[in-house]
Length: 142
Image 1 (cartoon, rainbow, N blue to C red):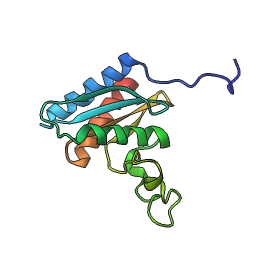
Image 2 (cartoon, rainbow, N blue to C red):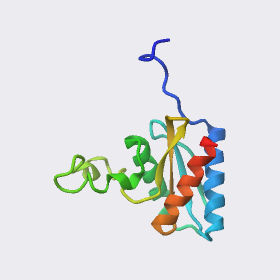
Image 3 (cartoon, helix red, strand yellow):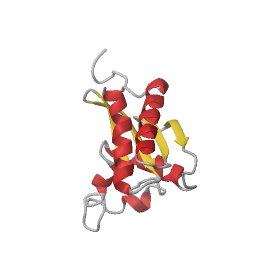
Image 4 (cartoon, rainbow, N blue to C red):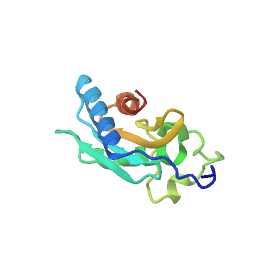
């Protein structure tokens, strides 16, 4: 099969559940209740979880962070500068039906160097959301 017709690799359910478990464990270490969303390479949901006590808005934000990281193959907050007026992605936040989230906590999931999905975490301070998401993504890379 040629490289042009090779199917794109994507995260499978067992790996997504490992991501959720690792992100949840990191949140527990930090004393947080968060929501976690794992999406495949195309941004479609694979696994989600809302820890007891997580805010009602956390699942939506986690999903948006994960979708953003998958769509741009970059941490969600990396788009903060490029979406400002005159930036390369100016206007995206208003044209993607609210799916774009520029807050920290969304990171791509890699299998080696190949992106296979993304994880988003929401519910704690943004630095801790990012740390939980990174812990989740690392579960696949390990």
